[in-house]
Length: 208
Image (tube, rainbow, N blue to C red; front, side, top):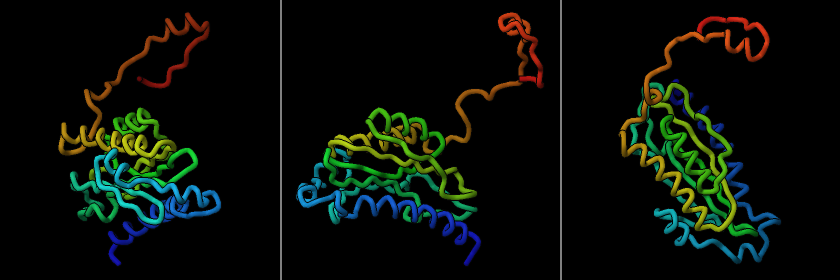
């Protein structure tokens, strides 16, 4: 096995285990998903319509997905196809209060803040932000989202997250490599006013 494959497999294995655990909670009938809840299966067409994408249904779980093929990614110099680990998805399952959603969204560095803001604005939770790969270019992160409530509202909230990402990319096809504006320059801080207010002498530890 090549070094690239080993790196890809090791990173993807951890991700797969995490996703399998989350998916098993969503897909497993269990005691909590009793007969009356199973009878009230979610409407995949309505969820797909609210998310403006195609939804699929299997064993009571409705799933939507978006493959990030809009940005070319390399891992350790090797091109990474979207199906190999650049897929955003959200899965919905019936719950007493309507539905529960869990998902994973691919974000590049300049998309993190807009995506997170959109998630919170839509009433979703952000439970994680992490990488799956080493030596990837541009840097790829994965934002875990979740929520509970009316299924179409949750689907619209997921759409809001994906729309926020697409808006960033519509302004610039390639992810940014640095923060906007000029980088901070070294400076100094006048300690005298601070000492006067606090009534204590300040200790200096280099320039700011």
